[in-house]
Image (cartoon, rainbow, N blue to C red; front, side):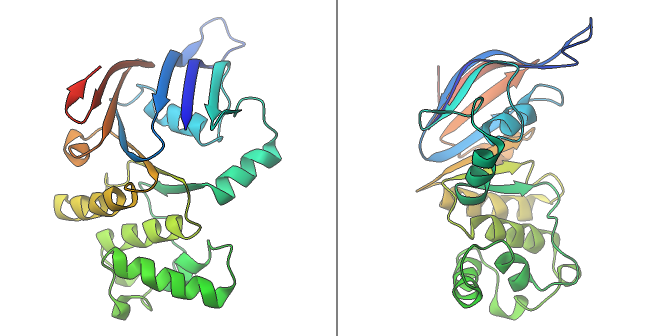
Amino acid sequence: MFELKDATMIYDIDKEEKVYAMKGIDLVLPDKGLVGVIGPSGSGKSTMMYVLSTLKKLTGGDVTYNGESLNSISEKRCQELRRSEFGFVFQRHYLIPYMSALDNAVLASLDPVSKARSKAEAIFDDIGIKKSELSKIPAKLSGGQRQRVAIARAMMNDPRVLFADEPTASLDHENAYMVMDCLKEYSKDRLVIVITHDHSIIKDADMIVEMWDGTVSGIRKNGGEE
């Protein structure tokens, strides 16, 4: 699905002292499954997510999605991909505070409202949000519940790729594992890419990409190493 070829991202490219966020990375990601991208702060893992999701363009090399170069497509095409094929979950839930859990999810849908509400209710049921909680505003939900509402919102348009950037960093362990269970279940038929610094939450990942100083320092698949 995704292939990085000599992928390089340089910040301050016009300055004498350049900052390399990614250095000549070659990487192929699967069509489905849970992929963890792990590394310390400044390792380039978030930059990789931005590049894969079309939020940033490489300064060198290329990245393709189903054979299409993301480095050469128009901004309109980038927006189409983000709207119809990509979903996003972040460390902060970014829910609208005065809207209910259900309305927060429906807001992201491209479907008519009635169809979207039915779909959202089904997703909430799958990820463990009770019907009695659908009418609650974010302030009345726990941290884990709010993050699961954010996941439901990201799933509303059946994205082929779900990007999750530090989705459990602000949660306790119990809620973190609950959120990861939701993402793992979704990854059975889709690609879920989780950016994290916490090895424990991606212990069940199908593939782990380890990053260090802008490079891929190791790849592990189903317990094995490449």
